[in-house]
Length: 172
Image (cartoon, rainbow, N blue to C red; front, top):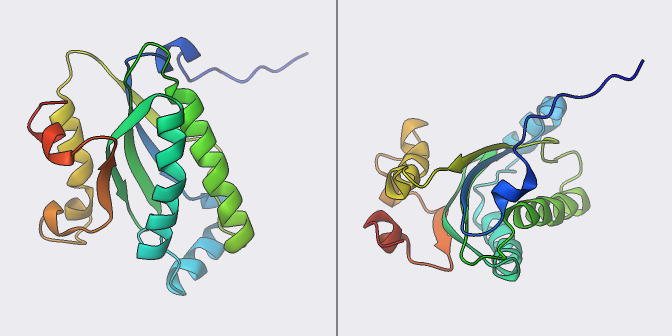
């Protein structure tokens, strides 16, 4: 008897074209002792050098797939980002899979024992949903976690291919 894994993703077509998808990527929990010891020894996704390195990986990935990133936010053990397709042939799925693969390879080469969990959380943002509200929710994550009193003070956030202020003002 074949056991089939339940599909929990929408068809890939939902990730193509002028769509917007919010993602949360988490470090693998199965290696919790390694993650805990790495964080204790200074490893954090919100480390300035690591955040810049991951942005350097993300930027060409999204531009090469016809996408922009209205917001990203690196937290110590996870990352939030929204990827938005800007044209009919944009491929958000390809962008997130490529980004995760490239950053995962970087971690396996430079931070032994630290890796992304196999899957990720995603939410396709519907046309009627307020993009600025989605972005503000992500930006407020460090505030909710008690890392900073206001999102403006958090250094590990930004956007790629657009201006964060334009997104917050509803221009994008």
